[in-house]
Image 1 (cartoon, rainbow, N blue to C red):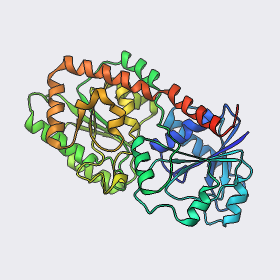
Image 2: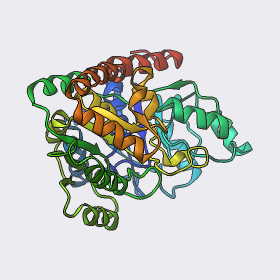
Image 3: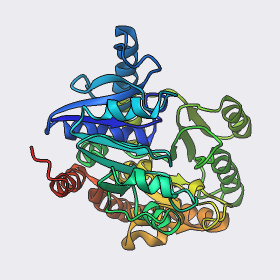
Image 4: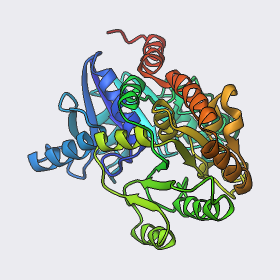
Length: 376
């Protein structure tokens, strides 16, 4: 079986969406030969060895895994190639898995899947888009939050929710070996657009935490980890953090990142702060894989009650959700001051994270393949 995965964000970015793409690709390798589409104007030519090596190195460092079983293939998708060139190119595959940016094209693959990660408010599918949709047999989203927005505003039925995967067992094991420190952690790329991680807000919150709760926050530091996509924004955050016990790390290996998760006691997330969720759902955290990774590592999540964050925490951890700065700081200070409660909630968070492990991820994909009648 020939399987192709395409995302307009690959191989440009290294975020949760790209991790999801590669996790799906590695699972699909149990079904057949897997290709990752790389947009190229000269798509009839093979990628150069230097190009392929650079892409492999970039994403192997990002995931900490060998990806050489996945083949990189030059593709007209995402280029100015003609409609017919794109359609004919897709016909060589038994399955095409497309992570959409909101766009839609006609697929000629045997079976085709659309995965939607961005909860955009847009006009319902046009007549021509509905014609294109006829070539796609299965639609899934990365969260129940995204599903709700898509079905309401796109006029498109979603077949399933397929949440990203976290290697929970690996993070659990590491958290047993590394002692917790007085660290509030946040992991996310530095950028302004769409679902900005709002590191500027995190810095402001931490500054106010130190002022309002000097005893509780004594000895604590904020650690911000994430690659830079907006240099000016990253500089602004660095300037805001000046003089505070805040560490900013832009380059980190997967093993180093996992160690930071293991050391952190509390995890903060503020994506969507001060934004109306009903008007701008795309500016919320669409799912929030870093929150799950932190929970698997026994870091207590004190996160905004918007987007995909509430469904990650589930019914048992709702007390850790907040809507305003005052509540966030009060909940954080209480955890800083109560080690027993912090340890209890860390255990509950770790147990909850198991809902997002490899087993559920793979089961969801197998069920999709059965619906599509594609067997191993």
